[in-house]
Image 1 (cartoon, rainbow, N blue to C red):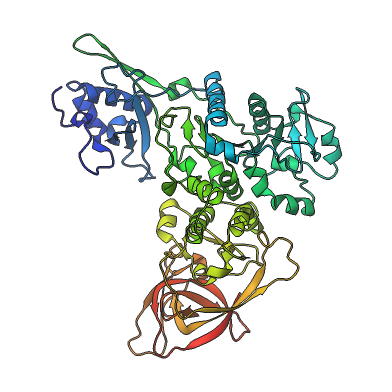
Image 2: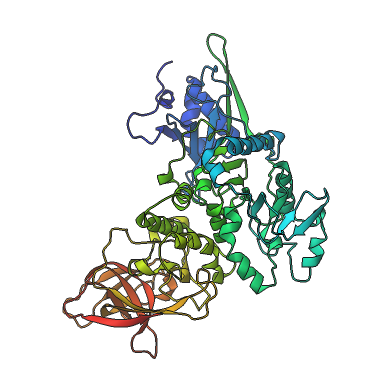
Length: 615
């Protein structure tokens, strides 16, 4: 094959190229296609899916030793300039002349409820049941939640069932987006009625599909939150919310309705067959048939990380944006995720998918790079407190990027996970922080670079009961300080714990802390020109040639003023290093609320340790 300057014969670059081969514009491929077979294949595949001026797009070819070939493209004038759209080029047979470039892979089914996909799903579960020793050791049929749905008693009636002491599992749990009001919920007045039977047609599509999957996997019981928790009983909701670690942690399988916006969306999705595959046919000089197929390139890592970032904007995955569902995903030992194009299987041993990019021969999970694998390994096995603390931080950071219908759920929606960490020795839980590491925990900071890139807007909770020093008081893109930072000169003297708290993991258990460190009054300003940005300035008043310092406000609109009309603020920290930026509560002498953080701060010689109260 002659060398082609446009596609470089799709030969990977040596060294750490990240799989990049080459790139250009669509017109480059079009012009090269008459004389280069590989360019003609790429051009035809691009034209089959990029229907709007394919010649004008930018593209790049990617190929790594263990991965499939893909062509990414984006429009030069796209309003979302950072977004690339991926196409997967593949063959169906290793005997194809181009199978060394376009590795064999599976077709996508236009209907994700196809017999092929359902059969694959059953094979995954059977293989795990019978061949994964780690998974078998962590499965238990001895637990049933307070209520479950019996889906096997009659074909067209579902029964709300309260298990007796002798009843055993297994059961399947559903994780789904409510998307507002769920059409059917258990209330005090319907509890008795639902025990006598619910017509299956009364259930919304997502619930009906979950019943179908439960039956396909030959399980008798299904757990759905809106039906297995009495929704108008605060006491029942509080009791059941405290059991989430057990409900999802003991489920035979947890079903994720990943691509459904609400309970009416269903688990399965249908597509136009032309959107699922395009077939390219060529013939070699020897007369051998070349068949290359093209389909949308599917991302998998964002699903495994339970994060919407990394998915194309056209991909529907609302479940990845919800706080409650993040906890449910991490707690579940085995997961079936129903995405827009395929099902994904995650257990303690394997990651699998219908498209075949993850299969039984795919290398084992690398726990250090996978948040769920780390969670499963460290929470179900043995781990040092330092590793657990770092894992907790890495769980909280993406958690704060996710949405809640009610701000007051910020702590309850993570309480099941907090319970497991508490049992493993992280100490007493203090509104999302931990008492033994409370000083470094106070220095969580805005991650403005990540937030700006992804359009994440930091907001203050509407729940006024949450103290400003807890990350539960905000939502957005935040991060913890590096684990190696040392905070000298700061001491927590007292934590004002609230009496009569029934569930300190899910409720505000402390309203204030008394803390001692260096406090310096400053003048702060910024945000008057662009209130969305988080960077602000400050300086110590009354000092000759006072140096200006940059700091970051937690919630941008809370500080918006000019240098000519600055606001009073206070820097609180140790002898050096990160510090908190505070605002004194009006009418008090030493009570402060948090405004933000300053990354590096050295106390002025004139400052001295003071004791303050943080609320």
